[in-house]
Length: 132
Image (cartoon, rainbow, N blue to C red; front, side):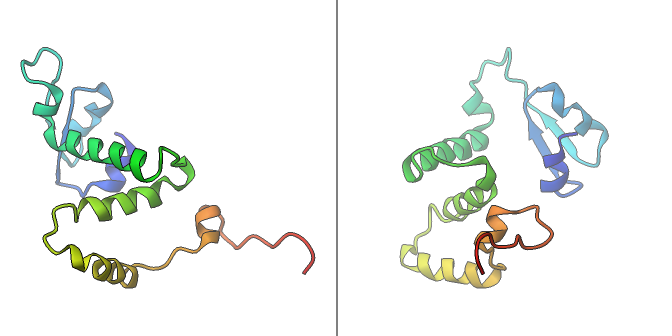
């Protein structure tokens, strides 16, 4: 089973996928696996998996617009966190509360230092280079 499913999806949840064979282990797991086969279907992929296409199209637009496509794999999780924050508020009727919600989120989540972003797997802080 894809590791990201185990990490990202709560056991007992429904996982809706296309017919890719890599998802077969989901059938024998603790997830409710729903499969939509795209090949041979009269409907298009965006019609069959509309939410997936909605999120992916917004993500592509945001990456190319805000970041001009310059998103590094190393910091992908941080970019996706930012995208999720914006995506979940895309239809907000209270645009004036955007900064308030951002400040609320900043208080609710532990800060991530630049050092943690640069060295996410380090168990201890790297020693500075150069004269002390």
